[in-house]
Every structure is written in C-alpha cells, then in structure tokens.
Length: 339
Ligand code: NAD
Ligand code: TYD
Image (cartoon, rainbow, N blue to C red):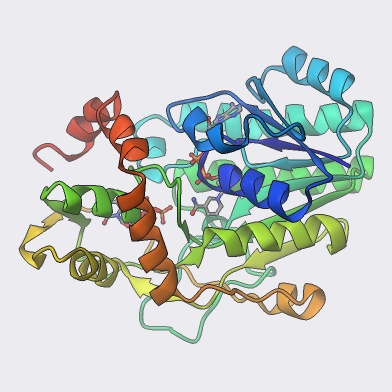
C-alpha cells in the first residue's frame, strides 16, 4: 500500500505522516509538498531515515511535476492536505488560495484519473458551512448544511469540495471528503491562534485577541483528526462527506486565558485588537455520521490536549523559534503593528 500525502510538511499533514508510519509500519508514505512558508522539513526530520518514507518537493498545481510523480510512484491512495490555510492571509492576498486550493485539487484529481487510484481523499474544513450565531447553541453543522462561505480561504476550500464531488459524479473518481473543525497540537504554525498565543506568552509579548474574543471555535486534538482520516480512507463510503469534530466549543478569550494560566503568565498580556474582516462567529460540528458509520470518537479531551500541546512547545522551542525569527517577523509586523 502506497499513500501519497500532499502538504505533509505542514501542521496536520505532518502529524498524519507520523501517525500513519506508526499505525501502518508496512505502508509506504510519499509526501509531496511545495514547502511554502508553512512547510517545514524539521517537522519531517524524525521520519526522513524511515525506509517507508519518501519526500518530493513539488507544487500540486504543477501538472507536469505531479503527473511525473504519479507515473514513477504509482500511489494507491491520495490524501490531499496541501493548501493555503490561513484566513488572515487569504484576506490580504486571495490569488494563491484559488491557485493552490482549487486548481491544485484539479491537477491532483486529473493525475488520479490518468494513473488510477483506489481512493482520493480531500481534506476540507467546517469553514465551508460559514458560521452559526452565538445565541443558537442548538444549531450544528451537519453534512447537509448548505455551503455558505465567508472568507476567500473558505470559498476556495468549498470550490475544491464541489469539484471533488463533480469528479466523482462525472468521472466516477472514488473520492471521499472530510470537513474538520479547528485542530490544535504539535507542529502547528505560530500564525494560528493557539501556537501564536503560546509563543507570545512565553516571550511576554501582548496576546492579540480579535474583536471581543467571543468568537467560538470547535477544537479537536490533531491526532484525533488523523485517526478519522485513516478510518475514512479504509472504511469510508466512496462519494461521501464526513464531518469531524469533538463537541468542544470554546470562546477565543477562554482559550487565551487557559494558556496564560498554564504558563503562569498574567492576563494583563491580553490585548484586544481590531477584528478580522468578515470574522465568523461560531463553528460547531455535528459528528454523528462518522460516529455511527465508522465508530469514530475523539480520544483526547481539551483539558489534556492543551496541556500536551503547551508541553510540546516548551520541549521544542527551537522548532518554533526558528520560524518566528525568520520571514514571520515581517508577517507579524504587517498584520499586528498598530492594529
Ligand atoms: P498548513 O498551512 O500548516 O500546511 C499546509 C502545507 O501545504 C504546507 O506544508 C505547505 O508547504 C503545503 N503547500 C501549500 N501549498 C502547496 C502547493 N501548492 N503544493 C504542495 N504543497 C503545498 O495547513 P494545515 O493547518 O496543516 O491544514 C492542512 C489541511 O487541512 C488544509 O487543506 C486545511 O484546509 C485543512 N484543515 C485545517 C484545519 C486546521 O485547523 N488547521 C482544520 C480543518 C481543515
Ligand atoms: P485561526 O487559528 O486563524 O483559525 P480560523 O480562523 O481558521 O478559525 O483563528 C482562530 C480564532 O482566533 C478566530 O476566531 C480568530 C482568532 N484569532 C485571534 O483572536 N487572534 C489572533 O492573533 C489569531 C491568529 C486568531
């Protein structure tokens, strides 16, 4: 069994590579990644010597490169994590989101059609459903919730999802899609809420909370997401969409306060800054389908997962300090200075 994992030098893809090599030591894992600002070979360093692992640097939107990889490697299953993934960057510069997230998905599926695979899995997001109001805690996203996007990022992911379903209907490509809530855990790039707050708190820097901090996200420990994808690619029904989430809704401000407490830092570091444009209020997944059909349930409670995550950032300072001392400095200045 050979699995081609795109975006494996990023946060979730990297965790998935580690997870699959551990859970399926006889599988071959081929990682294809463009190594954008979000891709990091240090995330893959622990597996580079594994004879069942191979890395190829390539852009999923580069048709020639991707077709060559398929011709030479003949993967059985493709799991497409590769994407531009940060909402704030998509507000600054939407173009690359359309290229990678939509056209890249098309190239990957065209290669699958040309060379044949048993499954193409698209890693999508709950953000394709738009947001829910704070005063309706009874509402959740199901797989039937209409697509209703807010940001260029979510619009690009939703476009890709529609294209994936179209390739199934039109060309009978054996696809599955998963739509997961916000992940957290090791190797999370420090532009995202949780690692950004951990890194800033450890450096006694202000903790920039957008708007009122009341926005709600449904947090899932990254390993639980990896396990769900493993189940879907082996047991999921072709042509189906699966929502993944652990009923762990939390307001941003509460997360930031937990991080302060865990690190022994004062809440006076919290600074309210200008809100994100079009900021989604609440995400909340109904995971009934994946539970009933595939028996999936999250295993890591937030109270344990956040402790493990903070410990990982304490134990792996070099990993994130290398990032925040690089081109990230310019990004941070542009996005947060005078905000
Ligand atoms: P990430 O930004 O940490 O990693 C993305 C990876 O993709 C990087 O290694 C990057 O180099 C690579 N990449 C980007 N453009 C590429 C291209 N054109 N060709 C090849 N590689 C390219 O992202 P992440 O948080 O790990 O997210 C992975 C996937 O999961 C994305 O599809 C995202 O939409 C989805 N998702 C993320 C979350 C979350 O909470 N982070 C939740 C649900 C779904
Ligand atoms: P983020 O990690 O960017 O994920 P997403 O936007 O995909 O949910 O942001 C999570 C939440 O945290 C979101 O409501 C925006 C908020 N946020 C802040 O308040 N401050 C920050 O510096 C960042 C990066 C995010």
